Amino acid sequence: MKDLISNINKVFESRVRLGIMSVLMVNESYDFNSLKETLDVTDGNLASHLKALEEKGMIKVNKQFIGRKPNTSYSATETGIAEFRQHLKALENLIKEQ
Image (cartoon, rainbow, N blue to C red; front, side):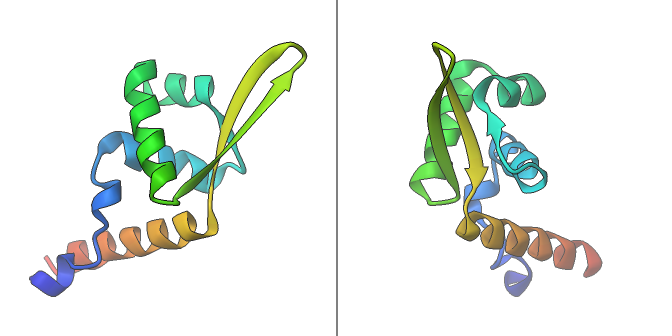
């Protein structure tokens, strides 16, 4: 059993982080407000999970102005994509073995 769970990445154990990465895997980038609405979380909750993913190198942040309004968007890094795919594969293997 240990081998089945050894590739499950603790970074993605939170439902919010799992949601963030799932959204970013199918979108080139996604802005903060859209993520907040899609995942139905508070500003603070989302911000803390985004920061954790950024610190682990899973996502990158792009800050810009659209007109005069600040806009922050996020995208998955190559490392994040590879790690998330490995995480999903580990979950699939766990399910198949049951």
